[in-house]
Image 1: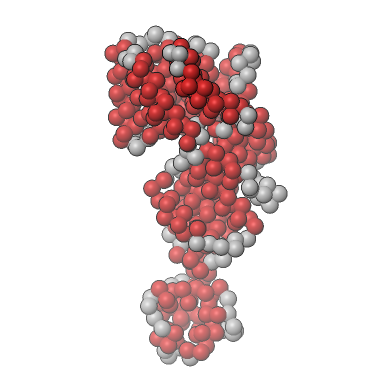
Image 2: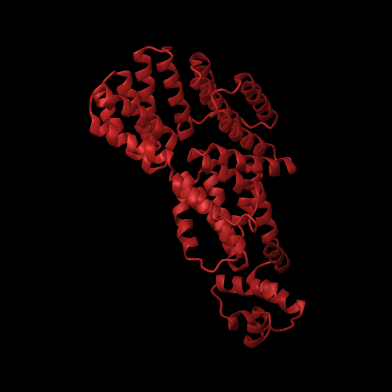
Amino acid sequence: MYEGKVIKFYRELAGMTQEQLGHGICSTTHISKIERGLTEYSSEITALLAKRLDINIGNEVRRLTEIKEKLDMWHEMIISFNMHPAEEIQKQLASNPLIEISNYKTLYYLLSLKYNLKHGKLTIISKQLKELQKKKNLPPYEQNLYKHVMGIYHMVMENHPESIRILKKVDLDKYSNALIYYDLATAYHYNNSPVLAYYYAEKALQLYKQKNYFLGIIDAENLMIIQIESNQFRDFKETKEQYQALLNLCDLCHSPDRKAKLLHNFAYENLRRKNYAEAARLYEQSMDLKEKESGIYLLSLEGYIRAGWEGKLLTQEELLKHVHEGLLLAKKVNDKIYTIVLTVHKYSILQREEQYYKYIATKALPYFREHGHIIVAERYETELFNYYLKSNDADRAIQTATYIVERIGQ
């Protein structure tokens, strides 16, 4: 059966007819039956056909039958955030043309999209999405994997409300793994639901611990700390100890990217508590571990600018220099949100009050609301509301308050 599928694939790839392939070996009818798995055939015949096609039939059959095993292994590496072996398996699968005739072609496309989303390879995602949207009547596992992938896609595209809407449709009885729980936790975090974010992060953590997936453990525990820290009355000493333990684990796992993420989050917790000098120091350490031309670098640069501005650690000239650097980088990597946020900081540093609040009202808040940046939107809505009250602009104050009240009621 497998031999027949392999022979048909390479015959068509070579542009040969059944008659041309079978000439001097066997009849066209026999070739047809071999390809469809409808007849017994001798190893001598398949060896001759393979020789004419210039393939090793044994190796090719093995490549076909190993596809499912490799796909399962690949998925497990993606779930565990073990991206180096995941990349090796991806290369092996990408170089295997027999995926096109396997029973797991759709599963391969789904995992490819999931891999590229988690790897940040956004340039090739649109083509893969178009391929997947043609697929109908998927088996239950693939249906749920598809929803998971689409949830990740909308999260990456910063459409957080749509992300959580899709992820909530995943049947966790038929599709359960640490990554779906982690992504649900992340989606709820972006939607400012700390209780649900903590709940799903803890579920992810339990599964990661069962398999000793240390990178997953770091990410899940980090997300849990963030939710706990929404309670500003928590003892910060305990938080420091948790972050230090995770930073040590990053060093043991040789994971500078996770260390950078942890340093950033730790910096933010210090910033919230107005420990400006410590926040700036941690933001700088985080930036040192990041690729400069990236959104995650801009994330920490923005935090560093805030710490420098609010803590009066940097001069106006120094702050504007960093803002200018960030705006150039944001333009280079086409990062809309940091173009907006850094422009807000620029007007604030220049103390152009009217221009500052006008930009927040007309540019920043509409973008934050549309893309589900709830926490950032709340901060600027409160600021804008207070400004309108101070300016005796009752109509705009009421309009801004309506957004805040509606969100509280959700």
